[in-house]
Image 1 (cartoon, rainbow, N blue to C red):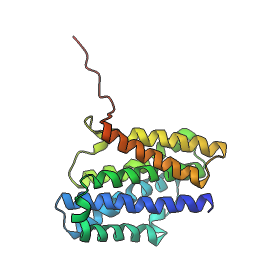
Image 2 (cartoon, rainbow, N blue to C red):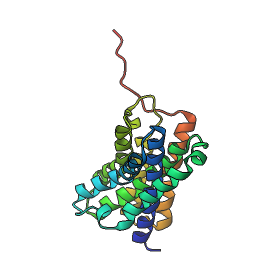
Image 3 (cartoon, helix red, strand yellow):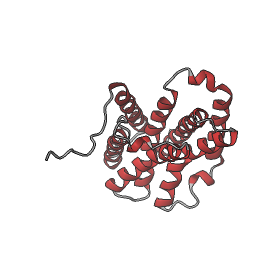
Image 4 (cartoon, helix red, strand yellow):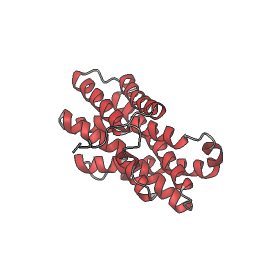
Length: 209
């Protein structure tokens, strides 16, 4: 499998993971079927569309490849009919969101580097790709984005570390398909470990008077 094919497959899997988390969030927020589809599509495509607009890929991949629209629809349909079984897992939204975070971190960083961006810019865009859909999901679900809450476990930090690893491996010529998949697993596992252990980013320091 070529690196381009591997990145494409990872992005499609990420679409399904993020779309499922969006659909589950919509169901938990008591949205109707239209709201479920909209939230699934927005969560899956939001970060990628923003990435493509920034790097000048017009029209964005979501509007050139039908699979980018069909896969979130399939995820929304599956979740719509089988959400009771999925919801019993309790942390289903977080698991799927962590999977999407890892996959989109890798694909966003690689696409930015392919577009000729520097390592720092690629890392920033990789994180933006990974967290953008989740932020839009939370806003549409009328919740404060988890990314901005001090009580929330690490979210952008695992993505940033993963994006740095991907950028360094890419520039060194080590980013083989297996390495890209490994980086995605690392980010997802880091996020889930942060949830389990309660790791949080620090808030503003309190000044003693």
